Length: 345
Image 1: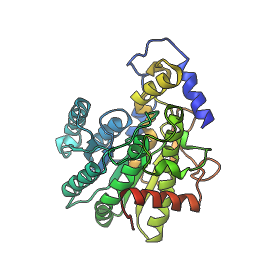
Image 2 (image 1 turned 90 degrees about the vertical axis):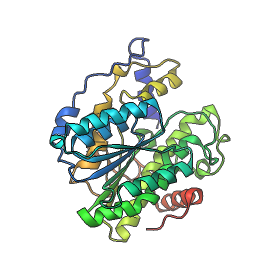
Image 3 (image 1 turned 135 degrees about the vertical axis):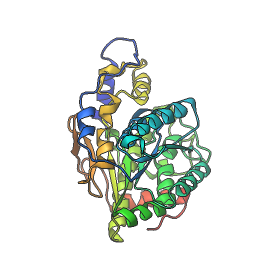
Image 4 (image 1 turned 30 degrees about the vertical axis):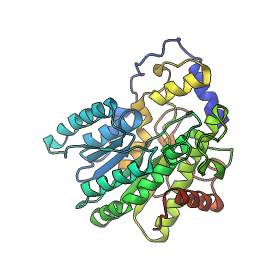
């Protein structure tokens, strides 16, 4: 956690005071994506697909021939994203790629998440859902409550993804039955590595009373650790029932997203230029690998091979990198069920 914060702060103090919208040219993305297999005949749902890593992921999946479902809040950014992904789909598979669709989903409102899951189930009734990409995330936010009373960072990053995974499990099982496997890909962060250990208090209905501004990074760390713990716990349960649905996780490193600009401004008082760090496209590689690479196994965790960039490399989803054990997995699962309902496999 300390190393990750130091890295972000270093980028914040490097370069000009102008927070340019121009990203560094991608160095790895084109060649990496070119060698990935086709997604023709598969359906991929991506949360937080209106911008950043989610948008690049949705766009790439459409280019690879998948039917793409973008989930997010209604906004001008969402409209632009849908247009961009539809344009990519129109040029894929000789124009035969299914048309991407947008499903409204507000991660600060469990009722909205349930409605979104119901919409996705209806869209995928006949063919199932091959990949649920739990990408949506926020960082260094105010200590305020969601519509359901939980911290907004925890609700967005963890609880709503637990809920949508639970609700879409039948669709994932349908794809597994038809095509042999399905995947749940959870986006975490290097800030989820190492201490502090898992703290259950952040996952209770105490939004607005969890440390104020000074604890914004603590809340983010807990959410990103929880993404990894959830992957490990879900992998255990899927393996126990002999499922070929794969639970995997990834980290992007530091890259030129809106979140990077926001984080550097909060940490240092001024936003850093996006060109100081790898592009959003290059930051998407581990997530794309987890979605598309046929060699991925359940329980895998991938992140950049270098501290803040590089080709995807496997990371141990175990101590000391990830502070997870049986007790922590059971605690997180129970807290998530307390929030959104029982999730049995």
